[in-house]
Length: 355
Image 1 (spheres, rainbow, N blue to C red):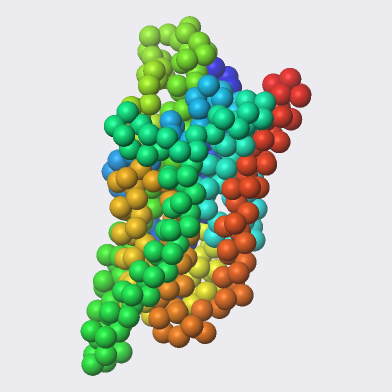
Image 2: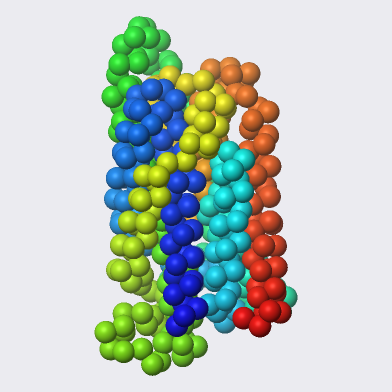
């Protein structure tokens, strides 16, 4: 029980860090275009993160039961997965790089589960089908979307910006800024909702996995009746208290802000006006909303970053500062391997030390 409480605390720390680490995903564009002040933007994003986090649990179910075999997961596994993800998130935040919290958690979980299984790679679910015939596993839910979602974000941002440019070519810049200064409030809110509906659910899934592990291993067998809500016997539902706790924690983290990454996302990649911010946010939010409904844990960071790149490239290719983009892409490429190694190494170290 003590280990579970440590896991729960660590999971909520991860969720809080996820909130301020990924705040930039939702508000960088609305801040850079000066539609909202940083404080206003953070509170706007926090509200919509909360609403989005309460909107569904499809992604949480993927994390809790669709990536690794439950037999290879115990409390220590989950703790090491979370701790590895936290280390990477704090490191990339310190560098001001918008890396993926989603992929950090998934990489940590895979690495820690592999360590628990003594190096048996079969515990990683590469590709399978659930009871309804839907595809589950790392390939359809993580690896394939890791490549396709940034591509869709880039092309979608460029196409939407191109369409807006054609439609608005006779409108004065002043009027365009006025119209899209208002419209960007909606697109920023939609982006915050998309972030909450996708990212908050990943921690819901990991806590549910911990609850299932504690129930199946007998760690919760002596719980008093009032604590029976901790027992989870299957992955078909995410407990309501888990949903509410994660939603509130992420919203609190979002409210704390993440100014290092906001500067990178909102100012260093592309110089934007409100219409550009609207195009990037709308594109990214649509992708996040669709993937959340399908239970695909895509990276909010990848989607909004590439949408911003696409919007910038639609003006002219040189409008994008590709040197900054290169640093961001390296962070993307390294996230899963490094957090996988961290999760594996932390689990092996903990076992060696007798935990």
